[in-house]
Length: 115
Image (cartoon, rainbow, N blue to C red; front, side, top):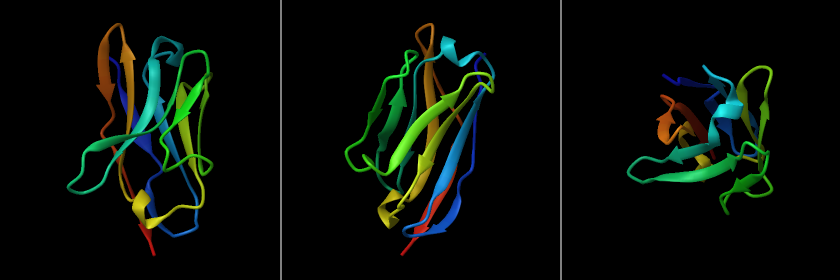
């Protein structure tokens, strides 16, 4: 059983920064296409950023240039550095990944950006 545990959410003013963490219960090299997704109230869950096992990254258009996804292999942790936050970045942020064809989600962490 793979477990993903997010942390680091909170309330921040527009223009501020937050760093989210996703701690995995397994070696993150065994998790394919780890990523962050967010869901705003009443909206679908959307891609924020992903990182492949080889380290290639992909970002949603709305966060390019502001967010950075990276990982610490030794700590089995993936991060999302979020800078210049905007009110539209508000939502629950979920960590995600695939292990042997099964998809896993964390429980989510709330990010609220005030204007």
